[in-house]
Image 1 (tube, rainbow, N blue to C red):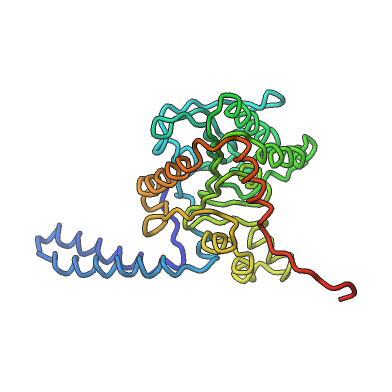
Image 2: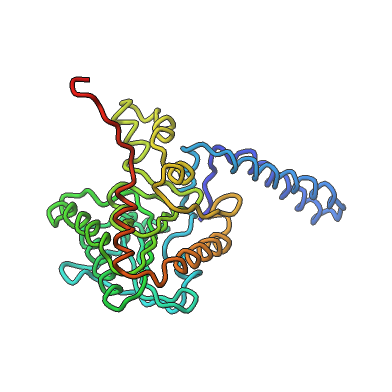
Length: 323
């Protein structure tokens, strides 16, 4: 799949094409243009660093949704070993929008669970574009409780536009399934870590996100609604999505400053889609570090700290009666 051209990457693409033309000219004619190429490559690296250092919120939304961005199974293949996928919610069916199973992280057994999108139309239909049904959340909870039973940590990877809003999903208890996950995750007696690796959309993301530590990749987003949805509600036009993205404070830097997340995992220059291995290596380091900090904490202390963590979130203002 060819990578889409994002508007803010236009200058980068032009330089890359110029370098490619020079390399092709040198190959065909035998001319020595190494010095010229070296100058352009240095200019390209500087432009990349400058461009990705000053992205706007809506530009980070575009990167979070990039179709070549690594998904849950891509990270599992690069970070974990001995992955054994488990299926089904033992009630209705297996929801392919959520994957999970036993794995090892640096030799330690963990339960890893995450949203999974597709790379093409066939796979996206199978994965429902990463939007789980209630049975997906029930499968996730079943796996979490299995990990708790055997005393192993839980790692969740969040990447969804949101829970599926279809009639069938609502009939089978979508809201109840999400609410149950929130309650049960809050009192799990094992260390839990969640990572927003792409889109963290509304309750569909939060259903995997009530954890001891919340991490975000540098260009991931996490919000109660999409910029487009917010713009349609507040400004009655999709043209206001840039304004909505800024107002939502959905970037990793914003959410860390607000105390919603605990750590920002750096991405390679150009975004995680530019270098899957480098992105996975940075995430593996962060997961190992946070898991080591949580290891050995008594279960009752984990639960107490978790409840305190979420109780502190948000800002409260006293408004005088009649104001």
